[in-house]
Each structure stands twice: as C-alpha cells, then as structure tokens.
Length: 616
Figure 1 (cartoon, rainbow, N blue to C red):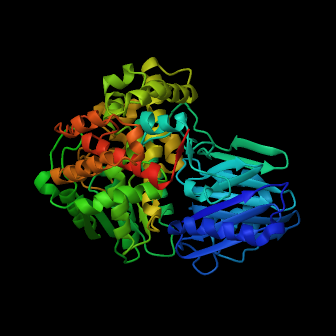
Figure 2 (cartoon, rainbow, N blue to C red):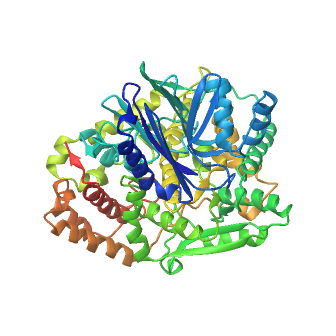
Figure 3 (cartoon, one colour):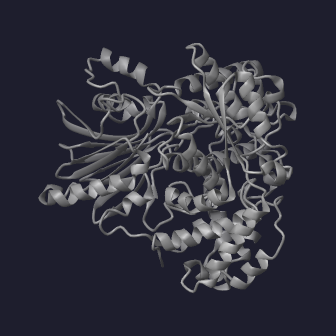
C-alpha cells in the first residue's frame, strides 16, 4: 500500500523551473510518508509531476514507482496506491497478448494492460486502488478509484492545474492551495460528521474521486465518468443456491486477498465477520504448515467498567480467545489505556485531515500502530453489517417511516452545544436532508420492487454509500498512519453486487440478523460463534476517560484563542459537562454517545487550530 500525489497542466512547462517542482513533489512525498515508509520516488515532465511513497508488500525488489514505460503510442507513467488481487491471471492474459514484463508487481500489470486497452482494462481489476496514469504525448492524465472506494483519492484545480493526492494534506503542499472551510464545509462537520458527502473534501474546492469513477484531464479540460455503478437486478437463485454462491464468493475473496510476499494477519474480535475471515485465512495457511497471527483489541480495565446494552451486549475479548483456540491461531490481545486513547484523538485528525469518529477512530489508530510490530498486512471483517443488513436500523420500523439517515436522525445533540449565531447561519437539518434526498434519488431500483422492498433497497444503499464509506475511511487512515495495509475481503465488489440484489427474506431468513452470512459461514465456524449476537467495535466505559475529556474541553473553552469558541455556546457546554452521560442514546451510529461528543468537539478545535483553517 502506498501514497500518491501529483499535478498536471497541459499548458504549463514545469521543466522551466525543474528544481522548484521536484522539491514540491518531494514535499508531497514527505507529507504522505506514513503511508509508504519503505521507498519513494518522483517523476517530472513538461506538463505533469508524479510522486509516490511505498509500503513494500508485493515484488519487494523491483516494484519501485513512479513506473515509466514506452510503447508505439508513446510514454506512459503511473503511480498507484492499492493491491490488485487478480494480478496473476491478468498477467498471464497480457503475456498471451504479447506483453513482456520486467517486474513481478501489480503496478506493471496495470500499466501494461492500460497501454493495450486503455480505460476498459480497469474494469478487469479486482482490488483496492487509486491510480494516476499520464501519457506524455497526449498531455493527458487519468485518475481511477476502485469500485467500492476503499482507497482514497482527492483532487482540486487551481490556475488550470489539476492537483491530486491520497490524502488532503498532500494537496496543501501545492502553491496557492490553502485550508479554507465555508458554510457547506461546516455543515459537513456538524450536520453529517463524522460522515461526509461522498466526493466532498469538506475544504473549499477540494473533492474526492467517487467510487467506481475515473477522470481525464487534458488540453480539452476535465472529464469525469463512471466505469462501474451498482445496479439493481432480479435475483433468480433459490435460497440454497444463494447460500452456496455467497459462501463461494466470500471464500474466493479472502483467498485472493491473502496475496502477499510478506506474512499476513487478521483482526479477530470473536464476532461473526472477523471470525469468518480469520477461519478461511487460518485454513489456507495450515495447508502450508503456517500459523496465522490474529489480534483483538480492548481497553485497560474494561471488564471492570463494561456496561452491557442493546448495542453492545457482550465483551469481545473472551470470544476472541475462544475463536483463536478453535482455529489454532497465534493470538495477541492489545490493550489501550486512557492516556494513549486521548493522545491519539489528535493523531487521528492528523491521519484523516478531518474530525473523525472520536475515540472509535483514535483507539483503532493506536491498535494499528501496535500491530505493525508483528505484521504489515492484515485482513479485517469490516463492511459485513452494511452489506448483509446487520445494524439495528435495518430492522427498526423507525427507519422505514423516517426520511433521514437512520444512524443519525436526531439533531438535538448536534445542535445542543452550538452558538445561536452558528445555528442561525448553518442550515444543519436542511443540509442533511438534502444529502439524504440526493442519495435516495440515485438509489438503483427495480420496477418490480414492492414498497417495502424498495425502502429496504434505499436503506441498504444509504449504508453502502455513507456508513460503510465512513468506516472504510477510518480503516484506511488509521492503518496507513502506521504503514499497515488493511484489506476488507467482505467488501469485494462481487459480493456487494450479488448481495445487494438478494431479497430481504434471504438476507434475514425468519428474522435471523445476517442469516445469509451465518449460513454461508457454517462450513468454517462452530455454532456458538456462528450464531453469536452482534457486538460492535469495543469502546471504553471507564469514567476516568470521560473526566479526562471534560477537563481538556474546559481548558479549551477557557482559552480566548481556541478557534472552536466562536462556534459553541460555552454556557451550554458547561451545563452539558455537568450532566451524567447517557451511553444508550448515540448521536451517530451505535457507539458515539455523550463522551464521544466531547471528544469530537476537541477534534474539531484541534483541526481548526492545527490546519490553520480560514472560515469564510
């Protein structure tokens, strides 16, 4: 996994100030270095500059980027972030077409395939990727993003120059691109955050390539197109056939994503999703007489403070240990204390360039930093709940009758602490409603859908487009911050395409939550793990952590220079700090309740201050 950045202007000649632009490319690399600590490179031509930092996973010796190749039509250059899981069959296909390879990297597979088939070759890729390809003779740049949007790619245009980077911070290296946030950006933070509108970079005039999208930039200007979109199709398989196909897709995806020239590991919570991925990995490695490393996460003294509730009925740690023993993995329990979690709140903002999922994100960032002492590649169980209907709002009547994001329909907590001026200026509820309606309008449907099935399809699409993207962003930023490559085999686009069109009666047979996934995994797991009730990502219940947050927020409010003071009603915040926390009424998702609101505000303040953001 890597980080990429660059710029293109068909009318400018960067070689006239060669040293200046190479220095900018090197600065971009320095800014993204955490994504790729093992190697780096730059490329500069008259009209384009490319930079790349590399995390060495495949072809350790000859996979250096940028990669440059020549064919009859001219010179092509590429920088690429991601992994192509079907690189081996694609490589053989290209060899049969006469292509000669000089490396063993998936980067060369992409470049050679693109030189032969242009954009059509991207449709053949199964993987996670953000790709930039430049053709010198045409003065044309292509940017591609994977179908699900697992790898990020941001861009902007300034003075007729397109600038792009894996992370927003890479864009700010380019002269004249500054961190400015307008009212729409603040609405992203306070109306939708920690989610954000797909394709919206929050900062003014900064955008993100959409999942399944590519753009071209040339003398003719900017052109954006989709090479893939999720479609609604009639499902004709029987229930048994659906189980069998789902099981095959999952097993095939996990096996494909085990592709690596270095040892892999898995995150293992003891829940269904991560246990299923782990079971398939462990079984494959056992065939090679190798033992899988697994990692579970918890908080220091959490057994002492844990509070069971409808969202989090049981602790994960005992189940992770039980699953590890069953699968004979080399298991590691990593724990986080209050101080580490608090400090990582701000590192998580550095990683995301935005306020994020508070301690849900900071703790994962901490855990990922510890995993890299053992492994640099991990497979996770992320995305099963969005794809297979695991969250409570898939099953609640409220989601069917409320035209709003089901994980964030109550605006009272969001508006409670904002100042009267901000509330009068920012159309928080209207902004959220507009974003919701836009997503509903683009939901792929079938004319034959009943009203109930139509709404189920809308709820599924909302989850794929919004909630899953938030978690994928979290996983990418927190893992790459420490040079860890996190893969998500359950989000293979083939699984998404297939399961999206499976009727609810098969996804949730007889009311069994994620019943299809459970039946599909029956070959790999014992029944007590297979049928365990969902328990989400862990969080701390230690009251000392909340005290730490409250004390720090009081310090911020006491500082006349704290930028968030202009946005908050300090009197209301102090009243909120004196009110006992309610962990059972999240304001976002299942895990972000009162303490996470405090943490989020601290992140917002740090973000405004650290990035020196100009509010307009």
